Amino acid sequence: MQRTFDIESFIRHRKQTRVIGDLLHDQAMDYLATLGLLIRPQLVFGEYLQGAPRGSGREAQHAFKEFKSLYESTASGAPFRLIRELDVPLEILGSTPRLYPYEYDLRLAGRETPVRITSPVRWVVGFQGFELQRFRQVIQDPNRSTAELFRFVVHYLMLFYCINRAPGLGRLLLGLRFPLSFETLADFGDMPFCVLGSPVASHLPEESLVLRSTEIAGNATFEELVYEADIVEMEDTIRERLLKAIAEI
Image (cartoon, rainbow, N blue to C red; front, side):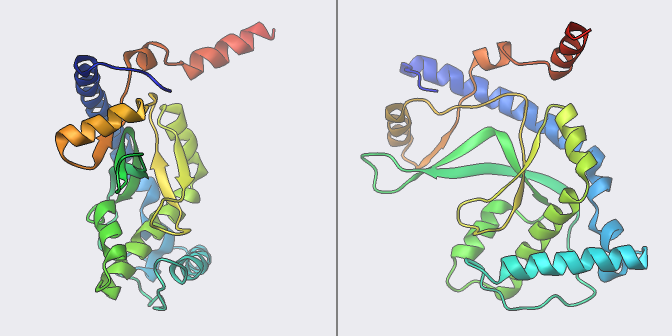
């Protein structure tokens, strides 16, 4: 969506965006904390994880076999190039879900380097202690620690596996108006990530405004904006389903 703003309007929208983004983030984190028990790896993999209680042997064995296949196909490819095998039992350093900024790069005419764009209303789901920004830094570091890279790859893949095998979780979050999707992200090859959306969309204004903002701020970052009209026009999915149902009688 392309819109033209003067500087005063831009500042007002940026303040509104920050308030809305913070409120939605807190609401999403509250839901995620409540639903966290549904995606605990210890309940899925049992004795295949260090310190986890013994679970259903057959189910845990099947889950670990599937996870091992996922790990091998993902970790061996670019940009990870890991040849380290999974040692049983696996050590999981954190299983508390957290939300990390959803970011992407935008190339603009007049800039040599891309601008890092952040969405205020979408987030990447990860485990506590495994910040996405740090993961990206590890990948890009030529002197990176193989052990640290291995931990990041295992933890993000394990989260994806646990969420993907619980389809009811996605339906529940969708009912709460925070849709869950699986996406690949730039810099991370074919690794699948869990991305949590929200009831409100965010947009980039005209590229000239993005360029001007980064020049004034003296940095290479920009946050998408949420417009008041997006909130006014929010759809109530339950209302729409009920109206559709009675219309068909």
